[in-house]
Length: 404
Ligand SMILES: NC(=O)c1ccc[n+]([C@@H]2O[C@H](COP(=O)([O-])OP(=O)(O)OC[C@H]3O[C@@H](n4cnc5c(N)ncnc54)[C@H](O)[C@@H]3O)[C@@H](O)[C@H]2O)c1
Image (cartoon, rainbow, N blue to C red; front, side, top):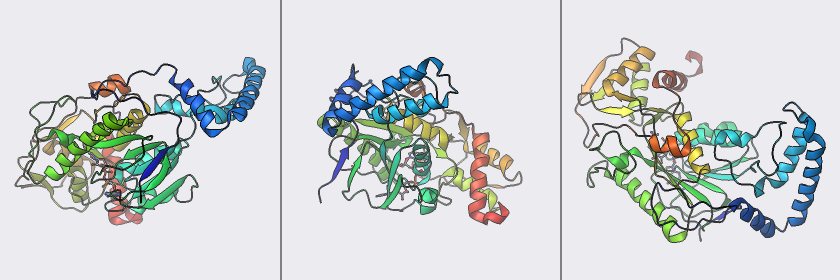
């Protein structure tokens, strides 16, 4: 079966840049106009579009003078027009602007239309939170997941929603879907085969920096990765995925985005998958000792999942390819993290030291200057605020609702 993911949006794939990561995509003056014309022609709807525009303009000019933000009727009129025309507009650059303002003076054509978005790995920890936000902003969402580490429970609350679908499928097999955007979270990462069109966001990882010799890590740093170690399949796999993503961009004009995600935590994480935050939280709740590998002085930065989701969406909607570090620059040693977990769950929780695992990085801290400047993004939730939210969820899942 041939694989084909067809772009439904108006945006024509941008011309391939020379592949210089970090550089903004070449600006496309009046690209929205081109997209508008192309869409109208492709869909054979110019007549409807014109009629809608005239109707909307008439209504808008009728109501506009009194159209305060509380004027519900004019708001609806503008919304109706926008529903007809939003596909002609350029995408806004921030998630918050996607909702528009109810009833205010909204320039015609500025509202975005609902997109059809594919989230591979959408039943997993990060993916399911991303799905929540996309559904909330009005998009139609298709989750493709083989439930290798993800859970149906993570997306069960959307199953009755007609704008939501979940497909059990392994991404190494081709699949035919029509979408505007692809968030690729399914891991192990595999190149998704598709026809050019949809904008493709790869969730890479801070592991591409290996055991870094530069601190904090900036995106221009090429990393220090052991190519034959026990962690190499993940680290080098993600590095290869970045390479392939950029090759598709350069060679096939594919619109791509690359996020390098640093340690992320929050509700719905796998309980026993060995990541340090979930380990400590589950151990403290079960009254088991917190296992610290090595001397506990190695550092990590912990990002709350809602901050990551905002970052992913800003990246997808913006004009910059990346790679971008998405992480919280707050840096903690493992012993400091254990202390936060003790303070949050059980001050008497014991710490047990174990021999360190191979190739465990000594330091990890993202430099997020680039994301701040180009995406207007930075994390907002500090560890001491985010951790209790995760603990509530873990308590519920480990002990059941009654003791939550
Ligand atoms: N959580 C973090 O701290 C972190 C850090 C760096 C990078 N990332 C990346 O972010 C992405 C999401 O991570 P997560 O923490 O939500 O992990 P997760 O394990 O909770 O989610 C991954 C999802 O992908 C699905 N999946 C795996 N292989 C698949 C396949 N072949 N076909 C279809 N579905 C498949 C799993 O069932 C699961 O639902 C991954 O690509 C991961 O490498 C996460």
